[in-house]
Every structure is written in structure tokens, then in C-alpha cells.
Length: 127
Image (cartoon, rainbow, N blue to C red; front, top):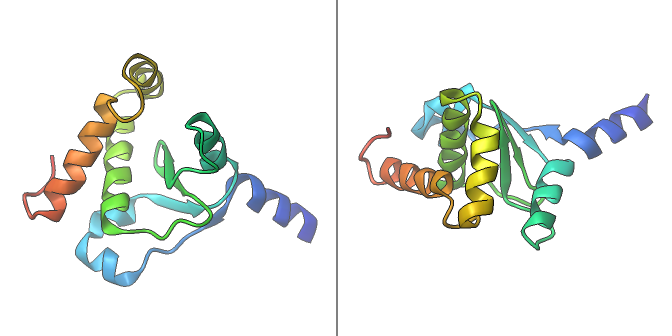
């Protein structure tokens, strides 16, 4: 059984409980499932020429990179991606197409998530 648990953690990471101080500032982060490690951040990193990404979102689950320390900015950015998933069932395809068309950093969904996080951190609310 221990081998199966280790295999599962290697593939899907482990559940993460966010620091209480962050949850106190942003209670809506509680609506997301947070995991750390696993294959997804590494695969996404390889696509970008890195060993890992800080995080990758799939529907209501965010997979943080194995060495990622969660910050308010990163968590709010990923929360916005959760919201984007909820807005359109086609979001994964739209995101991929936008990345292929514009590149990762100029991807409209990434820009939107950065702007959302910045607005939240500057006390201007969210969308």
C-alpha cells in the first residue's frame, strides 16, 4: 500500500492546506482544491523550457510545483484561472489556442489572471 501511495503522490501530488494568514486575507481561496507536486507542474514546465512551473490549474484544482512557496499573488492568479475554467467548458482549448497564437506571457488569459491578482492585492476587488 505504501508503494501505491508514493506512486499516487508522484503523479497527482499531495493535498495542501494553505497558510491561515493567507486564507484570512482571501477566504475565497478555500473554494479551490490545492495540491503540491506531481507530474502536471513538471510537464507544463517542460513545455516552457523549465524544470517546472509554479502552478497549473485544472478546473477547481491547482497543482503547485514541488518547490513552490505559495504567495497571495500566485494563489489569486490561479484562482482567476479556476474562474476562467468555470466561465467556459471550452476554456482548456481556448487557453491552448491562445498560447500557441500569442505565446505564454502574452496569452490573454494569463494577462487577465495577472491583472486580477494585482487588482485584488491593490484593494480594487476582483472581477
